[in-house]
Structure formats: C-alpha cells, structure tokens
Amino acid sequence: MHLSTHNWMRAEPLAVTLKRIKKYGYESIEISGEPKQYDVKETRALLKEHGIRCWGAVTLTLGERNLAARDEGQRARSVDYVKSVITMVSELEGEILTLVPATVGKVVPDGTEEEEWRWVVDATRECFAHAQKRGVRIAVEPLNRFETYFFNRAAQALALADAVSPECGVCLDAFHLNIEEEDIYEAIRLAGERLFDFHIADNNRFAAGLGHLDWPKIIGTLKEIGYDGAVTNEFVAPVDRTPATKYPDMVERNPVDIPPEQLKFIQDHGSSLLTEKFYDDQMRITAETILPLIKQ
Image (cartoon, rainbow, N blue to C red; front, side, top):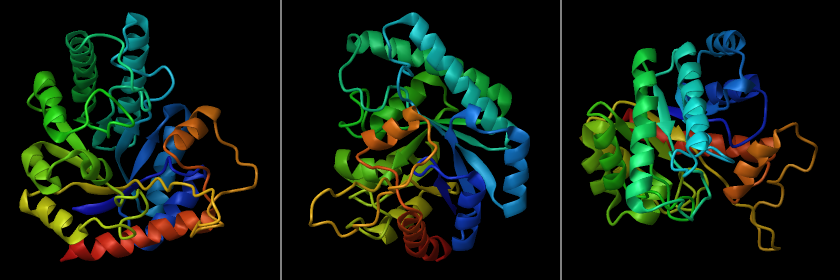
C-alpha cells in the first residue's frame, strides 16, 4: 500500500504538483482525466525527474460525458472519452482507471432503471475491452447521492463490475462511504480482492485528519483484506463564505488559467480555486495522517 494523490483539485503546472507531493512522501499520482492537457512524452519525463509514478487516472465525467445517457451518440462520445483516458494511462505506464459512469452532479435519470443499467453495462464493457488491450485495470466508483443518482454504495458498484467482467474492479472513497454505507469497514470487506483503488478525504472533505473518520481503523481494514494499491488523496475543501470561516485565505483571488469545464467541475464539488499555501497544507496534513498508518 502506498500514498497517492489526484491533481484535479487545483490548477497548477504538473511539475509544481510533483515537486510538492515528493516532498511529503507521496509515491504516485492519479492524473486528471483530461488527456488533451498532457503531452505524454513531457509528462513521462516530469514523472521520472521527480521520482513519482503514474498510478492511473480518474474520469472527469462532466458536461456531456455520460455512459447512462439516453442519446446513443452521447453515449458513444462518452465511451470514446473514457477510451482516451485509458490510452493516456497506458502510455504513462499507469495501472488503474477509476471510472465514474454517469455525469457528476446529474441527479435526474434519462431512462428507466432497466434501460440505464443496460446502457451503462454495455458502455462499460466496451471501455473494459479497450482497457484489457492496453493493460489497464478498470475500477468503477460509486459517489454519494448528491453527486449521482446512478449508484452510491459498494454493493452497487460490485454489481456493475460483476455485469462487466470478473476482472473488473471497484474504487471506494472514504468520503462517499461515510455518507452512504451502514458500515464503512464492512463495505471495504465486501469489496475484498475486487478493490482496485481507494480514495481518501475526511468526512467534511478536507484533508484526512481534519474530520472525525477513524483513519487507523480504515487503513487497518484495508490491510486486513490484503489491499496493496494506492490510498489516493482527493480532498475537495468546501469554501466558507461567512465570517465564521477558519480559512479566510483559502480561495485564490488572482487570475488562473483553467478550462471553464474544469472550473465548473471544482465548483460543483462545493469548492473553488485554492491558494497554493492552503493546498500545500492539505497535502501535508494528509501525508502526516496516513503515511504512519501505512507504515505500521
């Protein structure tokens, strides 16, 4: 087991991110699922320079990206997008694609339960076949009910994985587990050997250690099931717009070059562009909380 992180939470050059996470003991990164943002040759060189490996990527299922869409053309374009992320992961020598099937933030379905299940299973099978050719494992990820209606719990993710292939896995996220599961630890045990990836943020979606989740027990349960993948940092700090804020300097006020779609994705998660100091602190706190538990 090792510590990893996403990088979609703040718009900054990849070299800056890699230097930061190397300093705090991260071993790998899950690259933002936007292949057009990354030149493979340059990215591989940066990873090698900083001694960080690519663990994989997560699909940024925003805008018109939706494997559960009624429109066949929209589904086909969404499949093409997922395949492009898989190809990027393969070319960066990564292992995992975390797949969120339905548009994040969409809470109204396009069809009946039976229709959408068929659409998503068929689309995910196509993505899975491409992933197998490229040597990448797919892990389908459930989100909480406020981010997707499609599926929210480990058992549901396993049902989709089972419908796709015995070799398809799941990704779980401690923040979502805390909202949706009766028992976080039993959900991890249920996933068992099908758990390919694990994302972390505390119950308030700040860095691990800044909420009430029992991290020794969570990491201990991952060890119990023999999990040996990444524990991937994915804090999405909510912005406090009141005088009661504990972090008055968390929001970046200077112009930042970021695609509008990515900015909307961050804002739809209840966050905003974060200052470098605040972001750095969250990265550090996660490492200080989780690394000693991994090493025990």
